[in-house]
Image (cartoon, rainbow, N blue to C red; front, side, top):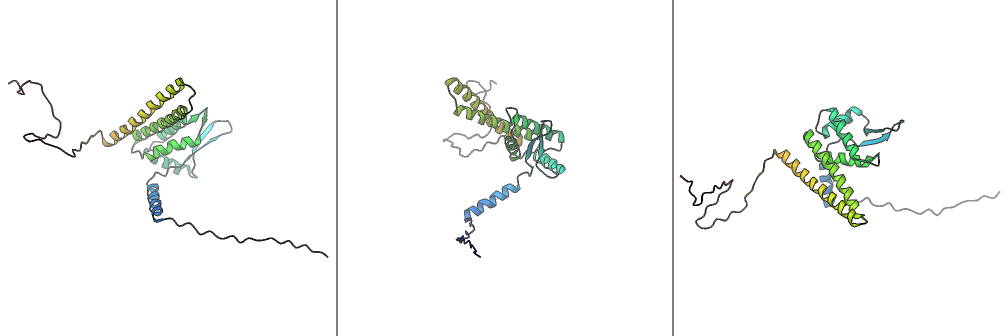
Length: 214
C-alpha cells in the first residue's frame, strides 16, 4: 500500500511586540478620556425604513427609556416633545434628495451635544449652528466645482453669508451665556504730564468753551 504524506513548510511567525505609547501620547490619551467623560452620553440615532416605506428614527440603545433620558439630558430639557421636535428638525436639515442621511443626522446631533447646552434656548441655537455649518460646507463644495462665473458668484455669496451667520451665532451664544455682560480690560494707560486718565464711560457735552452755560 502506498501512502502519500503531505508536508508543509511551516513558517514561524514572529509575534510582534505590542506598541508602547510615548509619554506624550499617554498624556494626550489621558486628556482625551477626561474630555470624553465630560461629554453627554447621548446615544447615536439610527435611521431605518419600516414595511410601509416610512423613515424611522430611533436611539441606538437597548433601553428606550434610558435612551430618551440620555437624549433629554444632552439637550438640556425635561420635555419629551422638545426632544422629538428638535431631532425631527435636525433630520429635515440632514435630508438629501428626499433621503435622510444617518451620518449627517448624527453629526448635527454631536454638534449640539458638543456645545453642552444649559437650556432649550442654547440647544436650539446649537441646532441652528449645526444646520448653518452643513449648508456652509455644501456651498464650499459647490464653490470648488463651479463651471462658470455666474455659478462662482452665486456660490461665493451664499458661502460668505452663511459663514458670517455662523460667526454671529457663536457670538450670540456667548452673549446669552454671559447674560449680555461686556468686560473691558485696560492693559496699559499712558498719561502725559499734566493730563488725567479716565477709565469708564465718558459723556461729552458740547458747549464751545467748556462751561455749562451757567
